[in-house]
Image 1 (cartoon, one colour):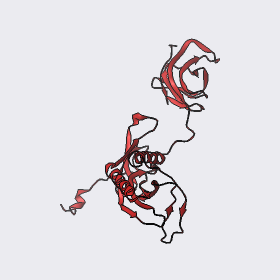
Image 2: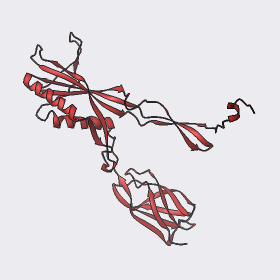
Image 3: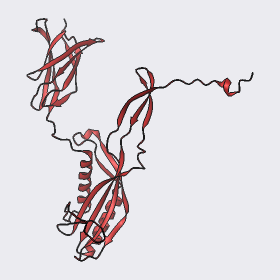
Image 4: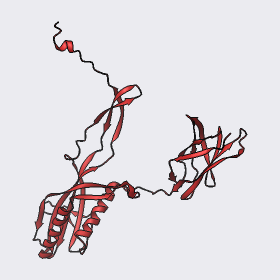
Length: 300
């Protein structure tokens, strides 16, 4: 038997806890093989050959983070390694330490928004965040307690229907299926607009007007909110959402505590709450043959 070759390892990375299923592809695998990742032996699940290519499916052992060599050894019927029947693909698999939890896109969006506000609006303003609301105000408004003045509070988001970027209706496509041409349906991503509100307060009217101008500039200058598509992979590029002011600023220049304030809403448009879902239903599409004679009334 010729010396085996190993051409690919799929996927090329996985968790340090192990348990991933790898598919090794090459040429010349024996009916029985042993596979090692680094110095550790992997569990071989199956070995087969298709169209001249040998495949071995294995389950990875636990290993510390880092790259490891992948080695395939051909075994004899009694399970012993066949001398000279081994191949190594250096650094072909990478063990990665998984995150406990993946940061949600919405969390990253809000973090990106806060950084932009801090850089462009509140660089010299103390920002406070509060979740204490007082509903006892006579006019029914919610009052946000602010620890220090001047202060800028970002609240939201609330979700609104997105009429500009999505109709949120099922998609239907014609595709080849097991029984011929089928009509495939897919529920699209649920797309919404995110509504935020900025509440800004100060004890000085002039300072409040300066902050009002800064927020207006921020909303006019930043027509798009841009962030990396994948926080761990810069090669994936960026994704962006349109930003729009939501109405005009509403000011309150007099209060019993001598605090001046204004609120201004804005929208981040076209955010996908989920990625959609393929529907496992297919309907056969029959070819329609048009009888032109019937259209002409059948006259001869």
